[in-house]
Structures are given as C-alpha cells and as structure tokens.
Image (cartoon, each protein chain N blue to C red):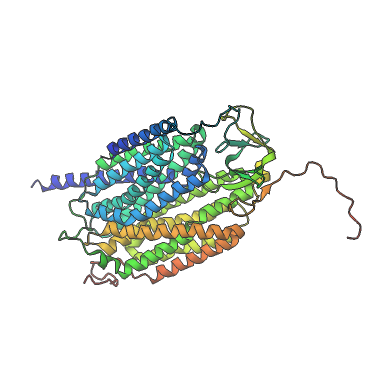
Length: 149
Length: 415
C-alpha cells in the first residue's frame, strides 16, 4: 500500500518539477521583452567545503553575511561535530576566503586554522551584529610601553 | 498424550519469536540515528539554506507531536500489532529513500512526516508485541523489556559508528540509503514472530476503556510529568556538552562526541536487563528514582567540567538514566493500562509529554548557553532534580504479587 503511495507522490513531484520550466518558457504575449542575460564564470558557495591552510577540513559554508553597502562581509561556517551533534556556526571574515578559479566541486580555502576559529563566539542570532573571526595580525609593531604605567 | 510434543512445539515457537524480537529491536533502532541532527548536515551539503532546513525540521517535529496520540490509538485499534510494526517499518524505509533520492523540499517534507507518524507507531507496537509474548508470568515483562532496550541500544550504537564511517567515505546520501537498507532485515525478523494469542494488555471483553478514564488516572499524570521533567533535563545536555567540546578542542572533538554518543549505548546494553529484573523484584518506583538521580549529577558535573575528555565518563551517566527509561516507560505504561486495551495510546501520551519537554529543553538551554553554558547546565541539573522528586512522588504501579507472603504493594482499584 505504502510503496504505491510513494510512487504516486514521486510521480506528482515529477509532474510539478516538469511543470515549473514550462510555465517560465511560456510568457504572455503582452509582456515587455525579458532583460538580456550574460554568462559569467561564477558559482554558488552554500554547502561547499572549506579547507584550512593545512588542507584540513574546517566545515561547510551555510550562510553569507552582507552589510548595508551590499558588500559580503563574512561567511558562516558549520564547524566540527559528529553526525550533526555538537557543531558550531562561526562567522569568518570574507576576505580570508579564497575561491578556486573554476567549478563548484573544488574546495574553498580559509586563511585560518580550525584551532584559530574553534573558540570564536557562535553565530546564532540573525538580528544581532555578528562576531566575525579576524585573522591574527601578521606582524604588529608594538609601541614602546610607557614605563610605570 | 500428545500434549507434551505440542507443548514443546509451542515453546519452540515462543523461543523463535523471542530471538526474532531481539533482531527486530536491533534493526529498527538505527532508523532513529539517521533521522536525527544528521539531516541538517545532509541538507546543508545539498545546498539548502538554513531557513529551509529549519522549516523542514520543524515540520517533522510538529508532525511527531501531532502523531503521538493518534498513532497510539491506531495501533490499539489494530488486532495484529505485527502488522502495525511492519507498516511502520515500510513507511520509515520509504522516508529514508525519499531523503536520499530526492533532496528537494516536497519529498523531504513527505519523508519527515512519514517518518514522524511511522516512528510514533513503531515504538509502542514493538513494546506491545513484546509484552504480549512475555505473557503474564511473574517478572516476564520486565525481563523482556530489558532485552528490548539492550538490543535497541546495540543497534543504535552500531549504526552510529557505521554511519559515521560511511558518511565520511561515501557522503551523507549513503547514510540514508544505509539506514533504509538496515531496516529491511527488521521486516524479516517481524515475519518470524508468532504473535501471542492473548495479550495481557488487551481488554478481556474486547471493549476498550474510555480515553477520559485513562487521562484521569493519577499514576499516568504523575508519570507523564516525570517523563517530561526527564526530557527537560536530558534533551539539551548532549548537544550543549558536544558544542562545548568543539569550542575547547576543535576538530578533535569529533571523536570525543562520537564516544559520548556510543558510550552510553554500551551502558544501556549492559544495564537494561538488570533494570528490568530489578523493577520486577523491588517495584518500579525505587528503580525510577535511582535512574533519575543520574540526571542532576550529570548536569552538575557538566557545569563544573574543566576538560573536554572528561566529557566521555560524565556522558556514561546518560546510559544509566537511558536504561531506566527505556525499560520503565513501557513497563509502567503496561501496569497502568493492563486489561484496558489502551496501552499504545498511553505510550503516545507519554511520548507527547517527552517530545514537548525535549523541545523546551533545547530551546531554553540553548538560549541560556548563549550567555553562559555553566548556567545552562545548572538549569538542566535543576530540571533533573525535579525529575527525581516526581519519581519519588509516583505511586507504585507494580501489581500486587500473587505469591503468598510477598510484600503487598499499594495498588489502585480498577473501579
């Protein structure tokens, strides 16, 4: 009984999927012509694997944070865990990510190691400003500490 | 004259059914593992957005809550509980296949709903089959339910291990195919079970007691409150502890968390039969109190835990309360509903109480943990103390022993 039901549902799903492009390809006559399109070499990043400098997997991209000036500022990475238990979502600085030139099957590189991001505050609340992991300054020149301070 | 071989044949059938029941528990436990938090890992890799994943999981959760009581009532109304269990297993396999093959919104929602309803049928149905097979012999019910919990936890722990390996080698989709594949032997095990002719749960007259009478039963209300307090304390503990392990030791936490999931299952497998026997010998209440005591201890230990590796021994305490609950929920439900024909409905009511409390637990503890996980663990320990208190207040549900000279236990009158 149930498998037959499943088949029906699958058929229904297939029908719905087939119907969607048919709708799009059939514009009403009175509409203005559609905007022109160009082809760009770019790919989506949600769900892609992120590797650290040591080529060890950090996690996967689950979200992108954009500021009011429509610039991407950070990527949220789902990090660690076992079968989905105990993972933490951590926002890392957008400019620390390096994207491979082609294809969406290749991995994204992050300048930070797992150890550098593990203890960062978790990204949980969309409505609050996010804490974003910044890379440690490569070389900081310490100003001479004033004596007796 | 030929009554002796006949009795032997009957005994052989019963034995075969008993072993088949072990395997049924083993092979159906893994279905719950695949459908847990792992779904969100899988859907992320299928490029789902966080909003969509949250929506799909909420639909599954809501479906479980809505299904608990009706699914229980449905199983009660079915004369053959093995048929109920078989339909449920097929529906869960169907859900796992849908998830693996069509990771888009509509099939995923269907999979979530079919899994929700099916597991609400499966858990009480297996318990009902077991209690019917165990019969009315003194101590047999506790013994059998102890075995059930043992084989279910072995199945669970094994599945978690295999799925972690398969998931990392062959990708998350393979985990659902594996989950579906592992459930098929469960169907064969079910075929080998010859149902008992008369269940001690069924009403002798065939008429089921009115639901209103069941819901007004003080023992049920008190036990449901205890179950809810248990989940209120328990549900958020592992996820929070695991997240804090990730915070402390990063990627190495994966192994620690794995041990925290599998370790308690080993404890459950070891303890459950003893819990079942002890509940028959000393009564339900002392065992329930003892098992619940592990909760506040675990909460406090986690609140003051300084290291990530100590998490593994602390999490083993989860096995103690897990074994207690795995055995006592169906056992107490059978005490309360003996002869009423409402066992599965009662299991549904308890499942609803536990599910709602588990959701509250993850939500509240998650909110507390945003500022301090120490506070969150203390709050969970407080909920665990409440569970202990409610267990201590529970009236004893074990039926009066028929042996002369046995300690008379207070028993509610079946007026």
